[in-house]
Amino acid sequence: MAAQDVLGQTARLASSSALLQVLFRVVTFGLNAFTLRYLSRELIGVVNVRLTLLYSTVVFLAREAFRRACLSGSAKRNWTKTINLLWLTVPLGVLWSLILGLVWLHLLEVPDPSVVPHYQAGVVAFGLSAIIELLGEPFWVLAQAHLFVRLKVIAESLSVVSKCILTVTLVILYPHWGLYIFSLAQLLYASVLVMCYVIYFVMFLGSPEATKKSFPVARVKALLPSFVEDETFVNWKEARLTWSFFKQSFLKQILTEGERYVMTFLNVLNFGDQGVYDIVNNLGSLVARFIFLPIEESFYVFFAKVLERGRTVKDQKQDDVAMAANVLELLLKLVLLIGLTITVFGYAYSQLALDIYGGSMLSSGTGPDLLRCYSLYVLFLAVNGVTECFTSALMCKEEVDRYNFVMLALSFIFLCISYFLTHWYGSVGFILANCFNMAIRIAHSTHYIYHFFRESTHRPLRGLLPSPALLLLYLLSAVVTAVSEVLFCCDKGWMARLIHISTGALCLAATLVTMFLSETKLIHFVRSQFLSRYLKKGT
View (cartoon, rainbow, N blue to C red):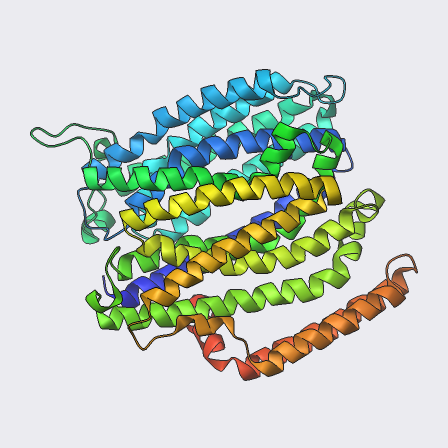
C-alpha cells in the first residue's frame, strides 16, 4: 500500500475514532453527572479508582506489548503465527487477573460494607471482564492492521451505549445494589465489544468483499490458534519484540496510572477524596481521550507502515521520510495548539465548569485547583502522545530495551515524587508529578526524533513552535479571562456567569481566527486529511 494511501486511511481512522470518542465521552460525561446525584463519592471512588485500576492493569499488561509488536511493519506477514501469538494474551490475562485479584481482595484496604457493599463481587467481575475483552484481541489487531474504521466505531459505540443504559437503569431502580450495578455494566461492555468483532469477521471472511481485498485470512477457523507442521508456533522475531515491549509496557503502566497506584497501595487519600479526584481527572482528560489518544493510536500504525523499524534515515525511502517528517511536524503543531487552548482557557473556567457539572461538592475545596492543574497537564499529554508514538514505531529491539532502563528509573522517581507531593499539596500533587513525568518522556522522545532526522534536511520538531502572533494572543486571552473570572465568577448570579462565558467566547474566537490566518499549512492538513470525508458528505 502506498504511503499516501496509508496516510489517508490513517487520518480517517483517527478522525472517526475521535468523533466516536467525542460522542460517547459526552454520554459518559452526562452519566457521571447523573450518578453523582444518586450515589456516594466513596462508591464512585472505589469503582473509578480501585476497580477500574484492576481492570486496566490486567488488560494493559496482557495485551499492550502484543499490540505494539504485531502492528509493527507491513500487514503482509504470516498471520497464522501472528494470531497464535495474540492468543497468548488470554492465558496471560487469566494469570494477571488471579494474581492481582488476590492482591485486591486480601492485601488492600477493604471499603466499609455499609458504605460500599459487595466489594468482593466487584473485584471478581472486573477481573473477569478483562479476560473476556482479551478474547477479542486477535480480531482487534487484524481490524487495526487493515484499517477497518467502521468496525471499531460500531463495536465501541454499541459497547459504551449498552454499558451506559444498563448503569442508568440499575442506578434508578436498584441504587442499593452498590457495586453490583457497575460489575454487571462492565461485564456487558466487554461482552458486547468482543461479540461485535466476532460477528463481523464471521460475516466478512469468505465474502466477496474479503476476496476482492485479498484478505490474508480466509476462514473463521484460521482465527483460532493452530499448529502448522514443520513450522514454529509463533514468529520468534515478533515474540522477542513483544517481550521487549512487555518490559516497557509494565513500566509505562506505572507511569500512566501512577497516581492511582499510589492512592490504592499507600492510602494517601480516603475513598471520598479519591472519588472527587477521579471525577475531576475524567473531566480534565476528556480532550486527551477523544482527540489525542485516537491520533496516537492511528498514526502509530501510519509511522510503523511507512518507515522501517531500526533503520537510519538514510536507509529509508526518501519520499516516505519526507512524508513522515511533514506529517509529524503538522501533528505536533496540531496537538500543541489544542493543548495550549485547553491550558489557557481551562484555568479561568475550571470552577465554573465544576459548579455546573457537580454543584458545590466539586466546585468547593480542591476541585477547581485540580482542574486548573490538569489543564496544564493536558499540554504535556498532547505533545508526549505524538512524540512517543513516533519513537515507539521506529525504535529497534535494542533501543526499546535501552529505553526500558530509562523508564525503570523514571517509574521509581515518579512514584517517590507522587508520594511526597501528595503529602505536601494533597491531590494536586498527583497532577504536578504527572507533569514532571511527561516532561521527562517528551525530552527523551524529542531527543530521539532530533537524532533520527539529523542527517536529513527535515526538521519536524519545528512543529513545536507556533507563530509569535498566536502566542501573543494566547497570553492576552489568559490575562483577560483570569480578570473576568475574578470579577464575574462564580457566586454573583447567572448574569455575571454569562458575561464571563461571553468574554471567553470572544477571546477564543479571536484565537481561532488568528490560527486560521497564521497556520495555513496546518489548516490545509486538517481539512484534507481529517475533515475531507465529512466535507464531501456535506456538499
